[in-house]
Image (cartoon, rainbow, N blue to C red; front, side, top):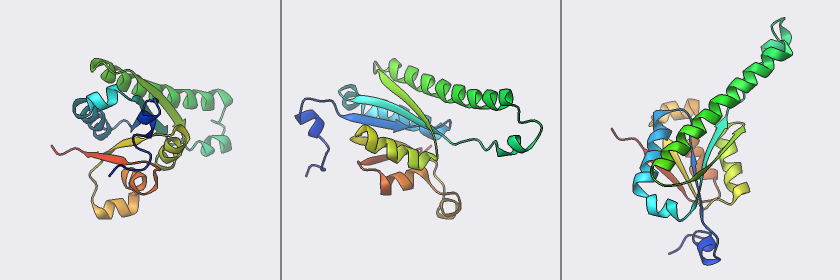
Length: 164
């Protein structure tokens, strides 16, 4: 049975869109590698989007202190943006090694919410996320991006677990 919405893009002549959500962890690096090795032909025939959401850095203390110069605040934000772009460039280079061209996208916000919003906004047909392998208790207190996405994303979600 075909999942509603999956394959619709291919039937209408448009490419399916696959999004791999990444952060700077070994788990998302593993998920991207897994996708490229195991779903390479599927991804090759799709539009691949590498997505990272940057958690906003709390700089409110800078505004209240004498350290909060406009230059320092701008430098912190620029550094954060550069780190996200470096992460995307590394992921895009990995894709290129497999002969796959990927688009990179970064936004600021709570990662789990930002990912789900991007899925809807970009009309993604498959979302891939890595699993940090946290236990139930840790997930209860820290939350889980992959768990949130499984329950809230408006498309099928593939959670890639690092087993070694």
